[in-house]
Length: 177
Picture (spheres, rainbow, N blue to C red):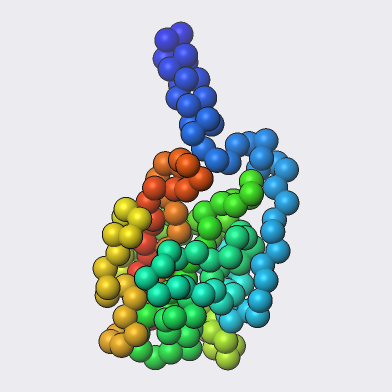
């Protein structure tokens, strides 16, 4: 029994060392305020967050603003009010010791729903159709299309944190419910 507790303590210590967010950082989190105009909001259960626009450079790295107080909507993809194509939303899993409330999506399953309020104030319910952990840049073009059926593609970082970055992304695809 003693070895079992020693192993659990060793695993917990290893996770604390590997994780960029430690309990002491989380306790001293001072969120970085999001900048720019709000283009909508997202709500999943009792968690809600503003959505701000961000520039997704052509052929570049998806990089929403450095905050955990808002999600980012790619300005190279469809607006939230679109009836076709994909709106691309991204958020930082954590930043500067703060954890993002939208990480609640990591606890969701295909079929679960959430709501998005667009730039015109209209709220639409969406249903998750895909949740997938992928390598950085291992994206399907159908997750970013400007034409075709209406969908929301959402991204945040996952995997091991090393050299200042997470090694993977979690992808969430949703369609109107």
